[in-house]
Length: 596
Image (cartoon, rainbow, N blue to C red; front, side):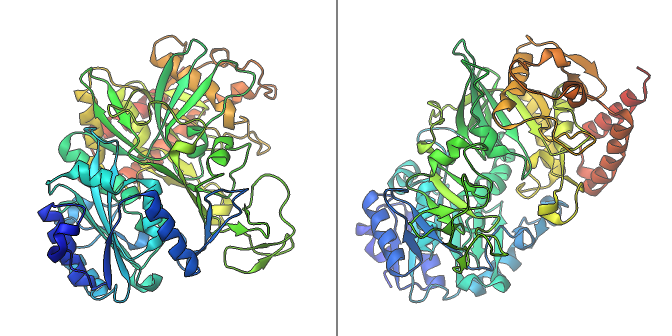
């Protein structure tokens, strides 16, 4: 085994704390060799060839997908494992009621046994990575140690990896320490543990992206949310997009949605031809780090460098920009592979292939009973390849946020769009946001699941304290963004969607941004400021008769039932629930009870 401490002259860094920590982890895991990743193109080619030679990935047809790779994961290892994900705070109460908790000493001991000798005969990759833009006050540095070549290649796409991170770190010891070992993808040895007070992440027993690409959900949300609370900023599960109007002005929106609500599609939206002169710009599709600027506004950056997207359902109608993005330099995982060196998944453009190899490596035809691609099949693609990528996406200062948008999938309750009455009411709207499950997801239709700010699986500390941090941030801002809620999924009595969605969603965004500037009309209602049908731009939109009115209707009795259900949710949070949110719920009930 190469010992990094004794060969420091050959190392890419002289940082003593980093070298010492890597040595400690090498002594624990006992790899055959230690390799420091530099993020170069030559390294990418070398690691790619290594995986191909081992049969772990295949090259796709270079004419169809230049630089594209195809791989399959262990069938037991295809998604994030929330039941095996832990917040290891010293005080159990600090993890809160929505997180799994494990005492730090217990977690270090339990996982230490798993890590002991886990990399014998394998290469230990030291992956320095930067979350954010070089030179930005938003940025954070992480080091991931892993025995997975797949992880190293994906981290190169998802983060600014290698020399750029070490240069940014310099001699500082302020970096997130991430340790990952595959250990056979054994579900019994699968743990994803976060130590917020130690700025540390340990992950074992998986090779799936959400569990092992430690810069993503682990650092950028769970650890960063805790860091943000201490340091006075916010780490949120939000897209960031710019909306350019015909007068060439660009205004920016940050938006949070639970799964299956079109978050990535909105981030890469293509306006319809009936709205000439409108354009959207993608800053980020998944994570936003937000700070208060000197001007009193909220500024946001996307700390990631790539997209880790769900493939099934992605096509030229739902997300043409995503389809263009994945055409080159993309790693596809658990999709189907076609005989001509291409890939396919359910919901992709065109007819299914006559034959393919499914995500389990089996022959597949359209007559097969099982899907060709796993429902959570993924693509990892460089964000810079997105046709709608914003010219400002790598601005170290970030972009100023005019509006924050929350949303969910509600068949009857929530209108197409409405604005909160003020910041604290907006925090209530985000804290209580929910989606109704689909049959494909759970086997039951219409089950309401609360997912506050879409952060339920990702908040690194007590959710009540998290709500309190939102309220405190609002009080610090001189010019806070307006807060809105949208629902693209409202249905009529026959169960058909009332709103066409996709590119047409820019019509709601137009009202949102004009409203944020005080230019759009609205009517005050018990739930917030609501547009009338005439306030929305529906020119060129083929809506069914009466659909606009249905999309904006409010059923007071249904909202009273919603408020009653929220009481149960708040009870679960306990005594750390901010009094302001209790008061907001009471005020909503009172407004709903007042005669029109």
